[in-house]
Length: 484
Ligand SMILES: Cc1ncc(COP(=O)(O)O)c(C=O)c1O
Image 1 (cartoon, protein in one colour):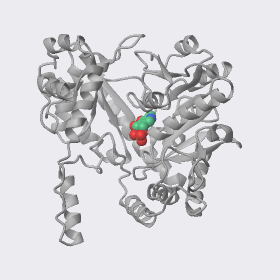
Image 2: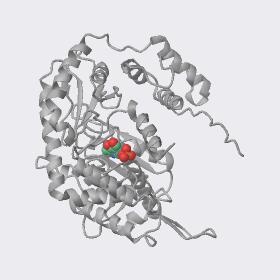
Image 3: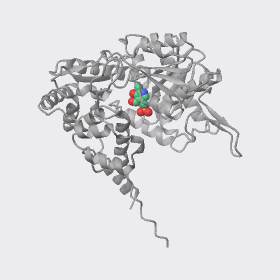
Image 4: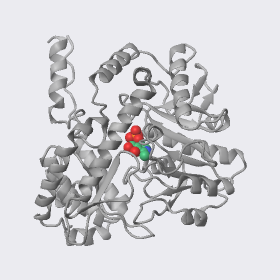
């Protein structure tokens, strides 16, 4: 075997993947549509693939890269003279560190009891995961069921002396709408509580647009931290995000240092020890190459495509756009009680070569949110909007003719009696078989599965969803090497 054979095997593995390029995969990937950007990123990644960003004193290049990228983010997103930041491995880590910093800051100021996070239900689950990891209680902030924006009145009701952080999104992932950042940050500040703006997905787009309805960045009074992902609309390869903090004190609150072992002195600004520098270098190179004008052009293309898409969808029978998309994300719901079921629509679009993300209906205090499909628009989709709309029209007709996905009533009734924490892995497997999910790959039609998930008690659904992944990650033990 030669190295080319090995690479050919890897390439063959990708045959079943959704495409990372071309604009038809409308979640997970961000394609600038520019091969020059990808080639440069790849070369930069290779140049830094063995560098360890764990120690910027041994590798001063990574300190320079980090300072340049954080500086660029601060310049773009309203950082004041005291503001600083950290490069992280992705949006989830940036959000986690924001929660950790807030918890530590609150404790240092004398906070006692179990810390509390105020979280709009539309905020990314990275914050729920952070709360789980750092033992913080989550209080759900409902969103307006029509605009899908976080409800400031609920924030007022829920704030108390145990609140360590209030989160808002710019924009939210599920619906692409902007939370009332100024109003909520002001309420938090009046109560002496920090406010984090999650601009992971919008932070490298909104500053380049001229139709953003209201300010959302670190310059807004009361905003104390902000996350923005370079591996999304910074068009960098996976593994790089920025967490900005209004003060060095808040940044210090998520750092970890120890001299408590006989090895090298440890200072970790993030959750990782060894930090891969490849993605950081690639992000730096892409940023240097595109510059402000390059990003403005790409953001403009993606935004124009989003506006055209939203207008086109509004004209399709049985579908409507949810809320006011401010950036490059669109959520689509069924328009009227007997209209197109969007979970079926997602399946129909899969059959036509597009990945649009089904989002099940969601129950919350202020009125339930309907099932939607989510579309992330990148610059690469811009040239394909007409084709996308034609397929959406066709898929909507086909979906309207399909039976509405109805969860099995017996299964739902049985699930209501289950204690998910007591389920064994084998019992989860058996339940998945009953639900029609068998084997390692998912069924071609996912609408019934999503409808079932939405009908189950949330803890049961969560256990079953983990069970699905348990089937995907099922290694076979490799044969032991024969020694000579
Ligand atoms: C608003 C928002 N926050 C956080 C995240 C999490 O980012 P990541 O997947 O890079 O961990 C996402 C991902 O889509 C997001 O859209």
